[in-house]
Picture (cartoon, rainbow, N blue to C red):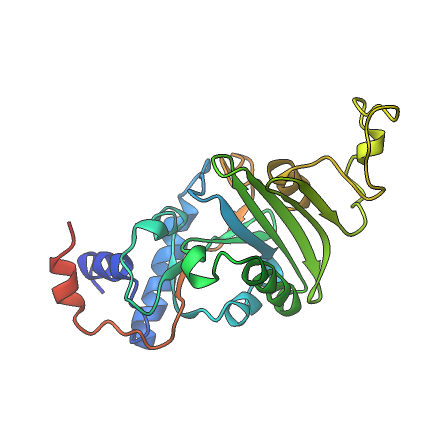
Length: 245
């Protein structure tokens, strides 16, 4: 497979009709190129999921992702800029970072922005992968969310929009609100299970910070681009590629 054809394929995100030879060539190419990549990488997203690297295969079924193609870290970071078919969008699964894989890109359309959609995806991921985490931070919109699920059920959740909401028992690394040095029992009120950590602090304790990825992080393997619907096809790929800016 030529580099030009590969570039068009990655930009378009159409991967389902690759032959076995091309798939093997892509995997080998991605591994070779990934070996030379060095952090820091910064995920261009405010919303991502995390699963254990050892059990990442389950994520494709959990999120109904199809026709994956191996890519390097830097190629996958462009997922938000890739064109999509009307019925499908590409999603990026990162290489393994310190034992974890992150999932990002087009989650609004692939999963939906409803609360049940977001948490439902987290529960499915944990059912398929044993454990899963979700992080969402939007300073402009005032949203700060993180959640941990195990075996299909949410264990701990924090959600801040207008008012903070804590669900589940605090995790061992959390500082309870009543133990915070600024807490004054005479004037402050708090729930027994309330903590103090937001998404950007929680992800450092739970798995990995999305950006910049630490220069000392251990990165293994290649990433994946996968489509949100099966058999999208790359018929007409040459015509589409000619329309690329």
